Length: 433
View: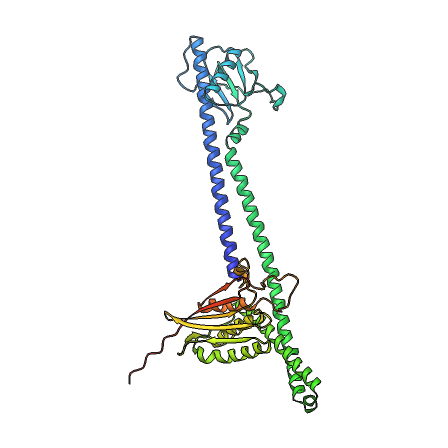
């Protein structure tokens, strides 16, 4: 994954998280304000109802204004302008709160003209089953009001807890959001860490493969000199060893070149240089080389191509590489005596090329992963076919760069076929004389 993509993911993730947290904060604050406003309105209605009933019982008239004064968020002063009975006040207050579904504790005090102080009345629980010691005790002092004569004060000590209880769903969703954000942040840290380790691993592989090129070149020169020496050529045993060294050099060099090609494709350093290539000219040498390898294993390679030019707009080097890889796979996994077939047909300005073998085939559950990097079909403890699992990955990368289609068709016990769908290049228009 490129650095720019990682940065975009981080920036977009941070913006998304900030937006979600902002929206959630706004939602929580708005919900709190609505519940707080609802609480204040219900409390004032309940207190007004109590004041009205007390005035009616005393045959007195209510003040024209300032009946209920809110001194703080949870403390109210109620002006009655008539005498107040403590037991009656407590009973009426409980009735009004129940009528308005305001299930909350309260404490009250009545102004005493003789002492010019608030006479504490008591603490009333919303839940009658609670014992007096079940909730925190208060300071039992409520502030008076200097402008009034007959009044009482009501305080709601558990107002904050009551509002939070009304917001249980919002709190639950907020906790879920916090956990989600924390998980996203943790995942982002893990992704960045894994990317750093993958980058270090890739750099190590790149450096290692480049370092191998120098000794391999030396081995190639030494093997060539040995094979051309008259004494070595005259000794069958030494000649066989010289050819063995050179063949192993070619094998190791091919694997290193494949790793380097994969590294270049992932870094975006490779370029597709499209040219007008005739597959009828490019494919036969590859088929002849593959046929020789198949015959060495007592197998057979057959091919059938349309009798016409097959011009493609492609990079000749990469096209040669992917065809070689597909033929190499068919030979390696075609069994002890591989039977490989290459069939091409033209339809709707496309060349449909199929490379088949009669090997053990691939189970359906493994086929979607066949083009993954380093993936090899599990074979238990038997590893009779060597490789890195890079060939088909490279083939898919080149097909993607050319916008070609490739798919696999396989059934266990009936072999495997890889299908390529390549657009044919139209013949260039003749330039009029």
